[in-house]
Length: 264
Ligand code: OOG
Ligand code: MG
Image (tube, rainbow, N blue to C red; front, side):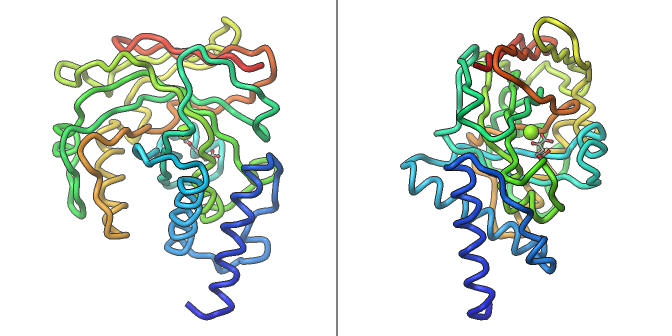
């Protein structure tokens, strides 16, 4: 990396961290850095997450998939999945109130979270191997909050921004994966008691296990493996919805129970 590129890299990390910490929107990095490539974008993400972990004295607990459903890919005009990091300090509890004023322009997404029981190390991880590595599954809601104005970004911008990750809630009910077919798990997503969308687990690339295999293989491109005990949010099953103070969003998944978040 040249000295100029190194400065640009550090400036982008600082800008993204400040936008999140100060709750303000910024323009996409690619407006001024059009050549930003995928590899550098994941390096930016790694540096940004490391900064949040150091500043907040927290730790990495797992990973999140994004843009794994056709609904989300259409919503964001992107045709490939992405992944980001989950840090402990961003976890919230079932029913916990979330202040909209603490975020920029949050949206809520219904997801299936899983926990792994063995290391997955790509390349070449198959869906069957990934399925065997799923210990349990839980109902989850992700709150995304792009640091970019109006959620306008390119593929590499959103990767650098840790895939819009903000808060996440995972049900304490961890259902053993043995005997569960994640593909056919029905999902109902409600806002203020009204159904806004429905889906099944197969919305995630055909099977959340395919998503998990994709994650392990994508991480391998950066020399990373997915350790046993990782939490993985497998991606929004349906469109993300905007929320305002007073809204309650709820996801209910067959066999996994329900989980809700209240915005204040
Ligand atoms: C990117 C993050 C997408 C998901 O579950 O699909 C995501 C975005 O839409 O801002 O987390
Ligand atoms: Mg998500």
